[in-house]
Length: 229
Image (cartoon, rainbow, N blue to C red; front, top):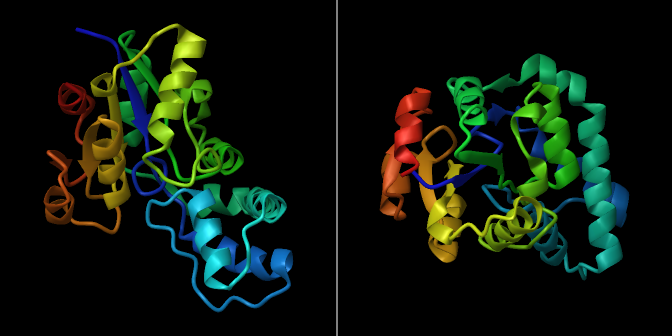
């Protein structure tokens, strides 16, 4: 069997982070821009760059490089502050720890993340639940790498080529996620997708969007491994 790169979504696929993302945006927006929040932050599988861009534009603010960077830095600062609360009140979703451990032990799998979170926020969230050592984050892609989630897959592939010396064909890359944007990212990039209905979308909604492999929740590692193709 060929080697695979497995790229996990983080929020609502691996962990429940208590909806702290939306609250963080509402906190940092007036601090960074000096303007009150008039439009809610739209997350739902977007990258943080995409969310920041949309939020600034919806308030008629030009998303300059400096302003976007300031928002991303402030976002990470908020999550650093609430790390202990996240660890205490949040949770690793059922089946996630077992799947991560099994995949980490499989020499044919190279495991990382493809997440809408910035790299700093992803490290804080995964670290809060002691999951960091399950991933090679050097071959992952993050929400501060591209505006669109689909644009993250080529970035992860290139990082794997440079670090591991493996040129993963798109169909040897498997995304595991819970949103319609995960489905779109797979279709756009040619990656395979394993969808889980552990977030705000039902299994039927994910299938209707084009997900061919859908689970209601993360299955046992053996079943999930077989789904990778």
